[in-house]
Length: 143
Image 1 (cartoon, rainbow, N blue to C red):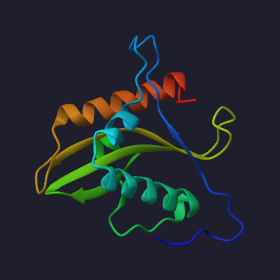
Image 2: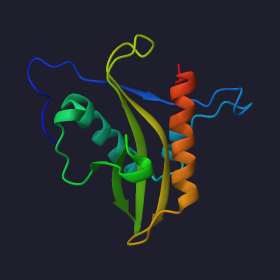
Image 3: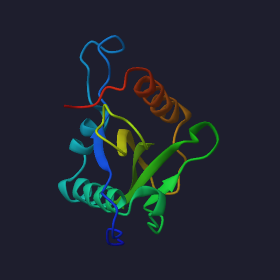
């Protein structure tokens, strides 16, 4: 992973929290996703996120581990980790300016696991775009 660029503050990393108007339990989907993974895989996600935050994201060149989504998922980024014959994906938004978040931030929305060399299900992508829309509406993150 590339080192932090001189003169640039690292971006903050936040975890989207569902708003109680949308889900009474107000879960944090990305934290739940990371908690469901083997410890080594979750640690790799955290290492990649930290490297992206330090780069910062617009300058990060992650060799396939940090990729911009396209089509209906445009504006969302994914962190990619493969382990134990599965592809794991953590989806994030970049928020360049936000007083609420304390500055430029990576907001982790949620994730999915799928078999290697298979496409994600449309309903999984729809869930992530729903989380992105909900974040844009309420701006709630884990405190």
